[in-house]
Amino acid sequence: MKQTKEEFAMARGALNMTTPQLAKALRMGIGSDRTIRRYESGECPVPGPTSVAVEALLTGFRPKGFEEG
Image (cartoon, rainbow, N blue to C red):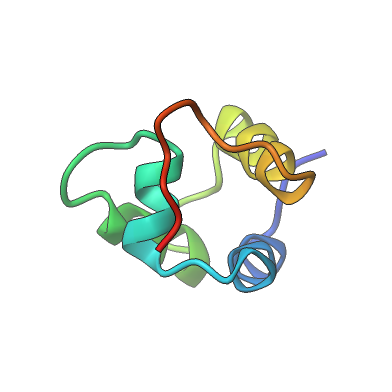
């Protein structure tokens, strides 16, 4: 199911991550925190793979090499 902008923003809040932290966890690259903000504002739809990755993060998955904080 496609994530809405509200669900995406709530997920980031539940993860207690900033936009740069979530972009890093999703391996989106430098400056991609702007893309996270665009998803949350509804300017861009949340892509399916991003939605699935956020769901995985919510279950406790962390990518290899990812450090919180």
